[in-house]
Amino acid sequence: MGKVGRGGDVFVTWKGDYSPRHVDVYRDGVLAVKWDLDDKQPMIGTASRRVRALIEELDTEGAL
Image (cartoon, rainbow, N blue to C red; front, side):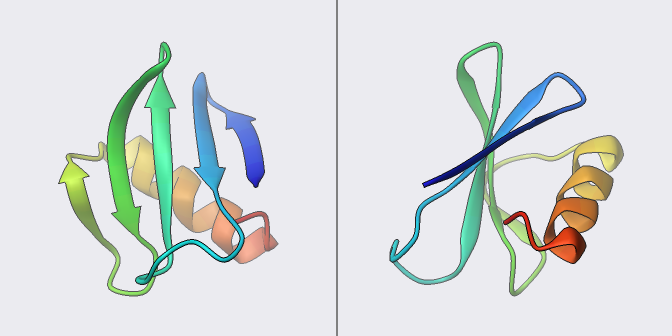
């Protein structure tokens, strides 16, 4: 499991999790969005522009 806090949100990935490759984003302990990293779209919920930018930044850094 990878867990990164950034901008007040917690981004969680699981090694060996089911496809597609995705990240769960939690705000205040509640799932805000499940984001498909390959297709760059939400699977569950909605992502603000700020959260999308943070996901892109973390993915580029290799943190997801």
